[in-house]
Amino acid sequence: MGNTTQKSQETEVEEPGQLQQEEDSNFTCEICIEPMLATRKFKNGSLCKHPFCLDCIAKYIEVKVEETTGCIECPGLNCKQLLDPLSCNCIISKTIFEKWCDHLCDSTVLGSESCYCPYQDCSVLVLNECRDKLMKIKCPNCKKSFCFLCKIPWHAGYQCNESRHLRDRNDILVGELIEEKKWTRCYNCGHSVERVSGCRDMKCKYALPPSLTA
View: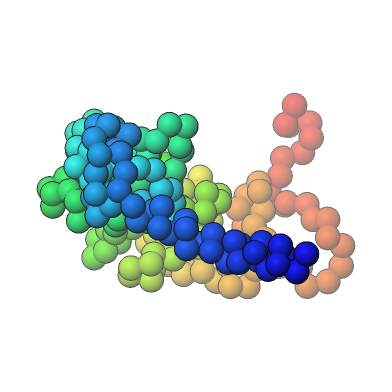
């Protein structure tokens, strides 16, 4: 009974080594159906381990890149893992690798909201990778604030539909003061209001009487 238990334990210890030996052994490529040395086996990082030779994967990538594809799936049957560009860099030409990277960048930009920084001394492309609804953001390059919706420098204290009314630096300074003091602006006349005390309900003095609004 003791011998049987010991033999079972020894078998369990040997399994990882056996798997590594199988991985490093010669194989048959599932694309060209040719026997290959273990040194010719493609390794897709740690994502998947299908038996493909380096030449077949290189040709497969070239065809996909020429089809203007950025995210290239492993050619394995029913495998949805993407090929790792860094793992493929050494088996494809520099031109194909650069095209592949360009396609990946394009697909990232098209899949995300984007705009260019409105400041002339910057104009860097900014992506909304978080997919949140953005308004005021700080450019990661020039560190200046601008409105992601309006695509213009930040209109402090003003709504997006009012940004076209900003005329000069004084308007911007007033808006910054409104934002700093956290004043509320009247929806009717646009004047700023600060509640020091009393009731929260206020009536705009410029509002028309009910009889005139009908």
